[in-house]
Image 1 (cartoon, each protein chain N blue to C red):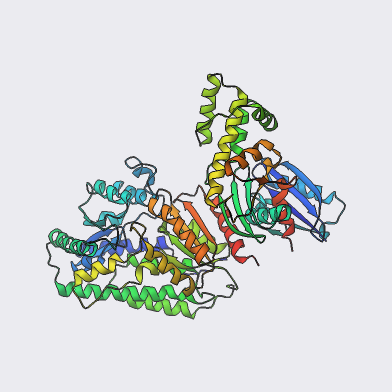
Image 2: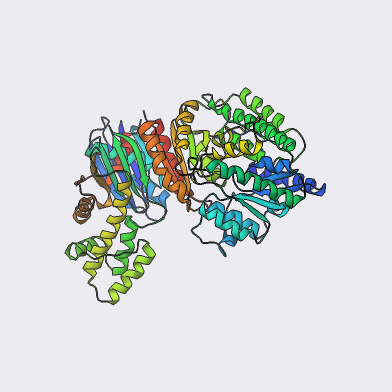
Length: 381
Length: 255
């Protein structure tokens, strides 16, 4: 069972409502920068007086159009993102004055070369590992280069003061988001994970002038005050791996409808990406580079700190089982999943399920069988 | 009290009736799933009632892909949990269960009779019973005839993993005059390669893992058991009732 309040606003509704807010901001002369990844230093965009907007594809929409150019075997997120842009179906892409991207996985970085024909794209060269010589220095240099690109594009000056303000603001949003995620630490969690993630992920589409931090804090207080009658002894699941926005109905919603609680996300939409703050005291460019280099994505090699995090998240959120979502065509998470399985089964002693899937409905039945069996595994006496 | 398990798979429907102590299978029924799971379920109910007990005396648990079409079931469970339980009953508590079904192939790791891990084939019919059914059709024989032919054939390699492409590969082999016996044997070998790759991901046949135990429709096919054992480098056990493992597990899990 999944209990949602009567006035629950779906992710799609929230996103749609935000179109108008962004349109009005554009009318007032605001600039917009499209982003695709949690590695994007959005502080620079705010400091340039512009609004960052996430453009990642979150449904099947655009995939057929993308496949006229991109290989079919590429991951659905890249195809949907590019297809929406190519076919002019995404108003957020339409509103974007430029795109700030990174050399993360091979599929994305090559796709950006093609996207550059549609909009000005600036690609930050993300180091492939945190420990390699000069990684932090070169990434700091990339922060400066990205700032210059924004200054040229919008004919503005990013002052240290503006950048500092943006850093302080983004840290406040991050702290608020972490507190929101931590609502689910309670056993039973007072709110469904589907609802928490819907709220958290819509934060990227907040374009009005009211205070976002206060809004998140109020929702967090409301959530904490809720009581879930039917929560009982539902098994608690952590979801790790690829971004899950495109499978929120097929995997997350069904998981909760079938009897488990989704209590923690260890991917780019959960506390894993939000918990690192930017140092507000030192050189802001260096501080940004340090913060963003800590993100535990499988594009890093090695990526052992992802598992250090997992070892903490599992007891903190009282997790009973781990599901890894691997999108078709995502080589880095698909390969790294072997390590996740070892850590979860052998070190943490918990059930582990790997779901290989995409944004289509074709495997709904197979996914449900796996989810059902996994729930039975976690609840077997 | 009696316990019934009904396992409606994509191809075959299986039902068993167990005694109250749940230590003996009293009756078994096997029939094609047909095109209407609801009618199949109704026919299985009539069979259950023909065994001489009142409906109220029987607890029915349904499993398999058609479990949602068994309106009279007292409970339902997924086929993973049921196959695990049934295999433990038939083959012991520590096993790597290999179930080659009509459209799903699953590997289930059992420790102390509990499902510790499982993996299923991706959404593709390679490495499932469907693959061999399509190949048998193409050769114009029934599945039992197909296996009899394969027993007599020589090993050849059919390299296409995709059922549709493998069918075209077979057409060209037939065109070249390759004996049907060899083609049938090659097709069985192709399923074995795919199943063993899946089982290997869960450590089947390696030290520390339990024996491999085959359930599903191929448990009475010596060639399949022989080839699986060879490819895994470990003995593969089975049981005359292994085809009913899912239904037996469902009956055992009835409360």
